[in-house]
Amino acid sequence: MSDPSRPIRTAAVIPAAGRGVRLGPGAPKALRALGGTPMLVHAVRAMAASRAVSVVVVVAPPDGAAEVRHLLNEHPLTDRTDLVVVPGGETRQESVRLGLAALPDAVDVVLVHDAARPLVPVDTVDSVIAAVRGGAPAVVPALPLADTVKQVEPQPQGTPEPVVGTPERALLRAVQTPQGFDRETLLKAHDTVVEGEGATDDAGLVERLGTPVVVVPGHEEAFKVTRPLDLVLAEAVLARRRATDGYV
Ligand code: CTP
Ligand code: MG
Image (cartoon, rainbow, N blue to C red; front, side, top):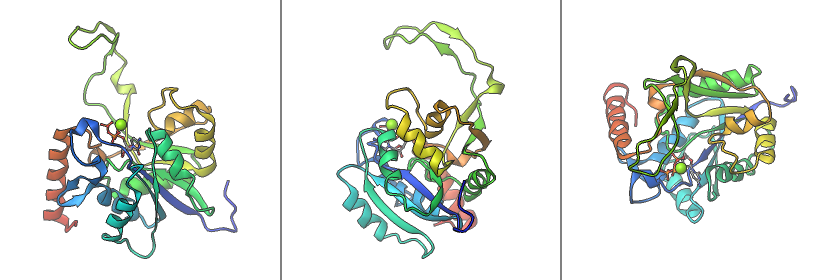
C-alpha cells in the first residue's frame, strides 16, 4: 500500500513499439495517421485527459525513440503531464517491462494502455484508476461479447477445424486497455512471469501470481485498431467527435 504522507501519483505506460503486421505494410502502426494525427498522439492525449495521470511513458519502436520524441514535441501536452519516451522490445511484454523501468519513484498506480486503442474515452480511464485507488490490485475494462465463441482444434490453413466446445457467452468478457495496477503488483508480475507462458495482457501476468483481477465496464470506443477495417471505424468515430464535441 502507498505511503499516505506522499501524494499518490498515477502513470500511464503506452506500448507503441509494434509493427502492426495485421494492419498491412506501412509505417509502424502507432505512427499511422488517424484524422491527420498519429494514432500514438491520440492515445497519449487520451491518457493525459485524465486529471489523475501525471506521467505518460511512451514505449517507442526500438529504433524510433528519437522520431517519436520529436513527434510528441510537436503535439505538446498540458503542463500537468510529464512525458518520457523509451525504446521498446521484440514483444509487447518486453516493451511494457522497458516502460515500467522508466517510471518515476513516486508513482503508485500504473495504467498500461495500447497505443492501438487511440480513442478510449476519459471516463473509462478514470473508472479504472478509481477502482485501483479503491483497493483493487489489478483492474481491466471489458465488454460482453457480441459473437458466440467456439474452442477448436487448430488445423493448417484451409483445413476445417473441429469444434471442441462452446464456452457460455454470458460468462465471457472481451478485455481492453487501459488496464490499471497497483505498481508493486505489476512490477512483481513482470519480474516473475516468464515470457511465452501465454499471457497476452498484463492482467494475465498478475493472474499467474494468484492475485485477484477485477473487471469494470469498458467502452465500445476503446476498440483496438488491428486490421484495416478498424481504421475505417476509427476515422468515423473521430469524425463524429469532431462534429459533435469539438475533439481535436
Ligand atoms: N507492442 C509493443 N511492442 C511490441 C509489440 C506490440 O509495444 N514488440 C504494442 C503495440 O504497439 C500496440 C500494443 O502493443 O500498441 C498492442 O499490440 P498489437 O495491437 O498486437 O499491435 P502490433 O503488435 O503492432 O500489431 P500486429 O500484432 O498486427 O503486428
Ligand atoms: Mg501484436
